[in-house]
Image 1 (cartoon, each protein chain N blue to C red):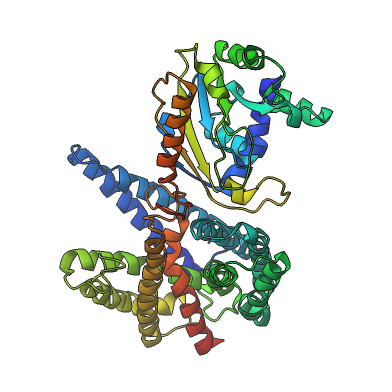
Image 2: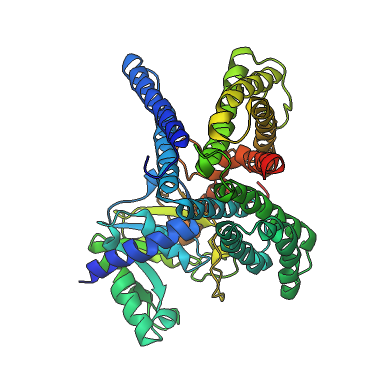
Length: 214
Length: 310
């Protein structure tokens, strides 16, 4: 049932939104993991990030995509909570820091065991438009005991112009989506974050809509 | 045929014929030389089928449908342009207003309100964009943004809407109608691109603007212009109210303005250090890469025949 809802949502809402109102310049599509377990580590500038990721996948796979999302934000209102859990299929995660590390990520492990593709935003927040905030270490705690799970870096650019945090008006912009190679294994959380930061810096150069210093 | 005037219908069939020939040649090339990668050529031809198929479909459905089609082309072009040029986060609302001007501009076209059509963007939108920006209050980079946004509106909305207005001009050439004018403009513009390229490949030696476009040569430019002059003078009496001499001059105007449209958009891309403006059309790049010449030929051709006949 939820699977059908999600397919309908992607086919009738997400895809027209992404392909007509927005418009994507996709690079490196071949690196996109089509089956789980896998983690997509994406930068986060807009609610549209998740929509864009959904639109990249064939409808037969979209139910496997599980965005990790802040429980305090998405579960506060019963209607949004129902929609986030049942249609989007989020994995809610507590940002309060009160629960221990294994407890926080148990739902992620469950999903990965189930062969899902987790969408993770290591910045933890959308932050300022078109800027990558400091990456959080949580991603390392998910993968450290899971050698079977590849981390694929993915950079979007331009979505923070289309729909930035705190704005209700969506303005059409073409956006870049650049997918990178699977990251090599990392021995520590700092190493992993360094690899990820490097990957983002490299992917940014392939963006058509990026006009800053090369 | 199908409600389309006879000569315009023949022109459509001719275009489809050329496309069929190109497709067949491409198949033969792929069979004869399997060692060469023809993927880009194939992609280009498939994309041409889509572009021409959609254009002919909307032209056949009717005038309003075709005007909506050109409005949508304006939307896609504007989106692509505004996405590759630098704009500020504070410009979002002004950009939205520029988008909103598209339905208005094309509504003036459907009603045939020439006075409004011709001043709406150069006057009202020109004045309104900075007003919306002032209300936002961000003054750093104000001048640049105001310039970029109005230029975007002129290129992608005002210029392109001239193609649509050809459809509502009173019919002076009953055998072809407004559709004939649109086809004449589009075919000549595209054929000019192709023949400048072919002459350039065959004889090209002296570069015109090497810094902007290393492939543009005087030989290509002049060869293309003579080709278009010849073809335009033969075709124009059948598709437009123009006689042979006027058609020949239309050919010169389209050839020269098409060249400049091409290099102006090339300069934009050079400035931004990108090769294509997007990847909407497989094998061609973005929509602006395809519309570049038309942005210049449309208003020039329109005002030429408007001065002579309307």
